[in-house]
Image (cartoon, rainbow, N blue to C red; front, top):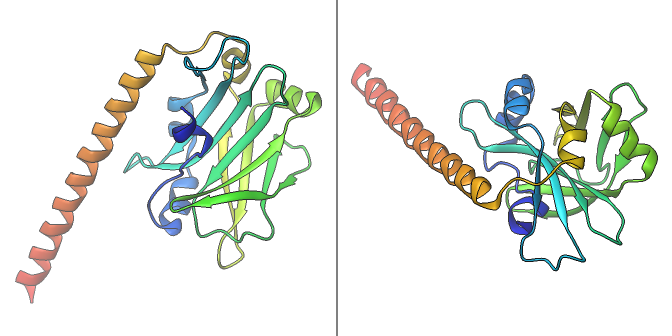
Length: 203
């Protein structure tokens, strides 16, 4: 679980493509919604869970951005956000819940396909998430232009306070998603080859 969601590997495409996907993410955000995943290998007294939502490209289904709330018994609640690479690191990212004042959050680590920022969630901020309609994670790209990744807060409270998804159901869904991504990548490869053939024949 931690390898997939705590790292939050967001997308493998170019940042420019991810910006296009971010313009109209509502359908993908609502489709993926918030799900609660608890680690069955953790001791019961630790009870570590993630409530997470993924924003995916509507065409490739590749992961663009993600937000996860990590709860661990006896520890502080964390909000973990991941965004595509190619962002300006010094400013960090900005988190805005509905019309509240944006909060700056520093990046903690970057992976080959994503950069991750974490912040501790106090009761007031968690309350805003529960009562809110949407949250927007904003970054600055290499040209210092702001790019926002909106995520719905619909269903967040239900997921946070409800039971976790069955691990077998989650694993099956991940397998199906992986198959869909692979299939779409193959289709796009063939489309590109056909376009190149037509371009060559036209010369």
